[in-house]
Length: 68
Image (cartoon, rainbow, N blue to C red; front, side):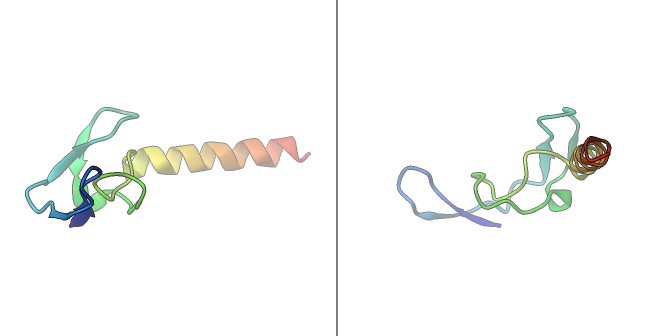
């Protein structure tokens, strides 16, 4: 995985990172499971796939009820 240093903009190789903690549920999971998100410093989403899926389902359900 490659990303840039936020201070010097040099490219960093982050091969040593194997786990990441979800900021929503707090569970550590393999970083390869997280969706790509270029705005984050490590290039991965802050939420695990399960939390993202739950958020999307909840959001779609709210939109479905709001339209009726």
